[in-house]
Amino acid sequence: MAELTRQTAMNATQSTLLKFPITGTSALCKEVRARGLHSFEQLIKYVRSLPYSRPTDGNDPCAVLRERRGTCSSKHRLLAAVAHDCDHAEVQLMVGIFAMCEANTPGVGTVLDAAGLTSIPEAHCYLKINGERFDFTGLRSGTASPFESLVTEQVVAPAALAERKIHFHKDAIAAWAPAHGLTAKAAWPIREACIAALAPPRSMNQYG
Image (cartoon, rainbow, N blue to C red; front, side):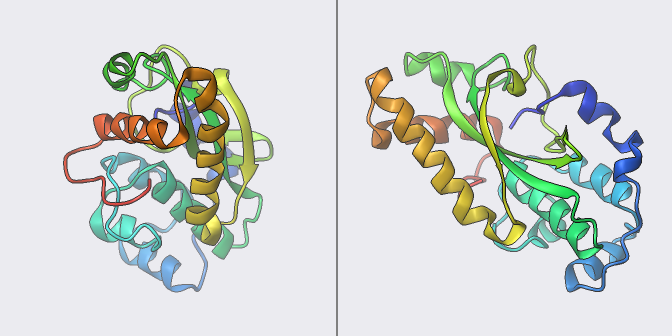
């Protein structure tokens, strides 16, 4: 997904909230350090630079490191899991629903136009620390922030993200679709086509 706040994302690694050593003893933290990433700030910069694409195994946080790619879900799940392994529980993994459109997510406009829509509910993952939101997806930002059309958000545990996000998102689509002359079943492929417009070919192997 497009970055939620351009200025925040740009300056995020300058925040003292994100500057701590990766000291966890989990296999995940060990794999991060094996790649020469010894601070959370370094990991953020690395993850943000990776291409937007769904890893083969979306349930394995290490897949982002091994396959050198990720989505908003997989990238932020990795970051949150590492932070928690380092006893930084203040780093919260968030899922928010916003009205995705061309202005806040450049690249989806053609798909929405073809469907006769101006926007569609999208679930986006990001981090929140002490009330401040951070997005490290790494996609180009648009002329508007998704936060301007944020409907709701919730904190989710990294291990529960895959199941919680898809239910949260599909419930939002189901509530929105009838007012736009659609069923939830008809609306979901439009959402998937929007994500496909953002991602490289062959990346749509599982929910992002």
